[in-house]
Image 1 (tube, rainbow, N blue to C red):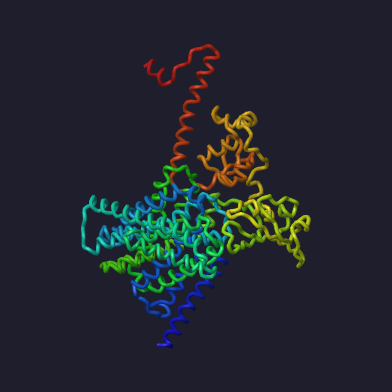
Image 2: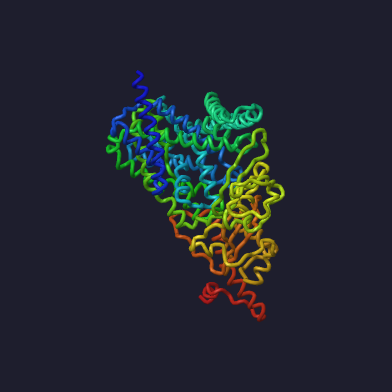
Length: 629
């Protein structure tokens, strides 16, 4: 017995270490990290090194707990400004997108895999949710600065679509296991009512649980070493409580993380570091267990239809679902295309595919194997192309800041202040003499091994280490002051235009200087308000607006989202690569408006010329020909 304990511990830790080392490979070559974790699990499973693991209940239990930890960390790290910025598109994708994907993939699976309609929709629901963790890893590994709107949309979607896919999957498993064959209207009504109850209870428990976590952390004077474990345990209690009363535990734990992460919770820096490590461990454990549970020798029997289904999901189902969901929003065509492509399927899809086995369904193993193959197809095809596609679509923006050396220190008993340690970078604004704002209180400077008061140091120099007391949620201004200049790629040298434009200037001056064709109402606006209006009411860093012969580029926005810097280019950038996706509703409206203006413009010009010459307007050629005939 004792020998078995040592052996299991040795094998388990060896697998975790191997998975951790594989992240170095992923960072070096840009490979999808999830794919490497799954391959390690497959290589050590039944058809690999021979480790026997076929307990579906343990796999689902461990995977569910790991997913709860990941979702809590995802909510904890999602800022409210990202939620406000992408709430509409992301929630539309997380709800209607899951339903559309389920329906499209289910219809294809019915004919490709010879499953019943309910079993086909069950497979569609299992693979309907996305796994953005792999996407963001690839973006970090490739050092890709993606547009904030696209990043926020994918991040919020990934955190909110899992509960809905889980509800659909479990509900369909229960219906099939009960050998029920409901009519379509009865099935839709049952799903809608069950969805409202499940999500409603989960939301209520999540909100109350998040508020309770914040209150308990602030009231209880726990040791800093115990505090992260206490918060993690409370998050799992929220997850379990919501599920116990019939709600969505996954939605509850995500909302609890979102509320606690965006509140003035104590020791937020310690909590973030701990949860980041726990999230990594949870992902490794979940991926390894799912890889061990799979049996690759069973894949050849359904390889061809499953691969075809994976390609259908990538090239048809996901793009159509994304377009339908984003119709009400004015998202540019490249952003819609990128969101359509970055719909990677991952561990959640494989975890949900275990539920048919738990329900004892006749084709449960077929559904699981098909879902596993679909995930592999998605990771292989989409996982390797995230970075290149983002560059091709023009969604990469130059970095705002250069290297920054900063350490956040939380002071015991100080819930509303932080101590930041900055190392002055060469070429940074403070090294060039820029003053530190009054709300920041520099207290200590280390230089050449000596420490002295900030008031006695004079001008800061490169290499100095400065300790500054600041209020919590400090503005990004300090980072800008202490960061070095960003190294601009030669291809991005003209990204922000050759000239600066004051956003407070009148747009009428642009019309007078460059004649871009602004309307009378637009000429009454400021240049910044004009750009914001052309962007649909929200501007972000590196957005571009084409105005006739010129192009205005957003150089910077303040903490409230107001444009604080604009650039002007006389050579508008070439249009991004055309992609096979549908136009957004905003683009459709713009094109219809342009078509109507161009159609009416010749007639208006002709009328003006006729009035100037005091001549009657000639009849249209069609009408004249009709009269003569």
